[in-house]
Image (cartoon, rainbow, N blue to C red; front, side, top):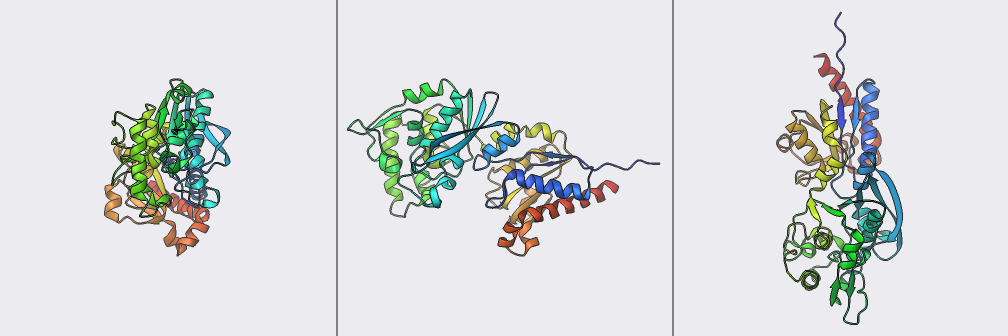
Length: 380
């Protein structure tokens, strides 16, 4: 008698479904669905992120330990924030600490929001034993060229009166001198990794103010003014003029520029998180990969987490299935990305609102459907 064939090992590696479920919750729901239909299927879990919100959660899901401290929030309020630590590698996240999601009441503060709390968090991680700090840069609320981050690490950014500059772009207008030595001392030789997929420079039509300022509340007439402030500040912070034009300097309202001042290396956010999560080792054990995020669209293909998962899986010769809250890619684009099948929750729910409200249950249904297909395949 021929023994029954076993279902393949499935690697589930999604990003968050923004506004609905975290990446870990997406993974759990899909796993429940698969096990309902195929209880003996081996499931490997790898929640991911691409440097934005969810980056610390992805590191924690991979086994890092959470550490929580009180830092300065984006508009000056006290805020609890976390860093993840595994050995001597820490992961910090701008979005959770001083990002749009951290703004009190969601009220935009384009001229006063600061990255100071992120600098304080990095300092705490280094003091806690980190020798490498991966800084996820997505979802920022400010356009302060990372001046607040530098201040949070101890840098002296002063006005002509010898006073510390105020937060945000208002402070940049008064910047007269800068001493970065205390910030470098606080890092104590630790290596910084700027984890993001932004290639924008700090200044100009493709710079931080022009491209990202409006989503942080800058009006059409304010973009040029803020760009001029960034240019003036950059001249003081980097007299050589070498860094403002560097790819990634415009990330997170110019926070990339500040990190470059501190000697940071830049890496793709998705690539850095997948490495931290041990994705390649899990991939070697899998026969099928499931990825996804809240919306699969053209932005997904620009180096975001699911696209990198699909790229690596395809290189390993493995089939990839994508699951999304909403699907805005045609079959040809999916195939080009290495995705063989895609499921979306909106078509199941009938509308976006219902898909968001019922995301967990719908993902369980998708998991069941996937398992049924796998079982059919294994019997073929």
